[in-house]
Length: 358
Image 1 (tube, rainbow, N blue to C red):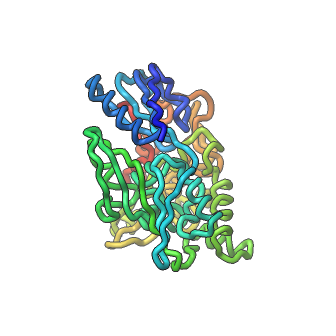
Image 2 (cartoon, rainbow, N blue to C red):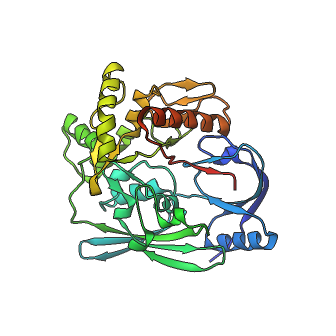
Image 3 (cartoon, rainbow, N blue to C red):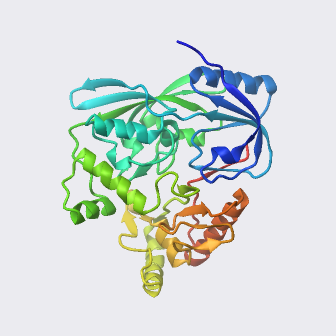
């Protein structure tokens, strides 16, 4: 095996590493291609006794506009080039690197007729980041298919986590909640080939019905990609990180208090972008509410602009850099949205996007 040393970039311009194309400079950017590089990066951090953070594809983060006096460890993403496949009855186990771009794994599975990931087609970012944020879309979440996760921390301690030990929640995992910034190096997925195709999500089911399509692995992937394209939610369509806010989960009493207000407001607005279903019943009497709907009825509709930033003309949850914006412009718009929704509904929206200043 040929080991290539990590690459050290000084005063790196973070615009080039952000889907928003915003951000200042960082004193040291350590470009890592594999686990060997990660070990070197942690040695560098310890030697210089300097604060650090970790990122990869830049599709779910927003950098500080100022100069960052520290280290950013950049896990350079790459397309799927190696996968270890094991079969046990109806289960297919796939072991892959955390550096791999998520959708390249989904595409490989579809081409090889291995079901289980197709609903999550088109989600940007790497496998490691996807596990960390428990990505999901169109009726599936990554937590449903993770079997084991392998990590390394700043002390070069390597660990293995089972699915339950990952403590997955909605867009959360143990890897987001720990302070020692463990890096996911590899993961094993368990894909049950006996499970039926999942077309329960409203948009997907309606798409298949409208186009008179039978559900199969290839059809579902194509449908999801087309739906995402129509919503402007494919990487590179805009200078954006996609969905900026999480869908809030509220108690039944609060939902009863706001539902009438939402219905009146969306009727007044002509149902521009708050269509049914705009809420979903989940476990423990909680109700998940569409953040997109709350934005729309609060006046933040597709195409809304505020100086150099705005909202995608195709989907209200996607904040976009229209022209040479700074990170602070995006943060200000996000705060304006958060404050307005809170004032209208007493619901505090949470960001999906993470802010990095070190």
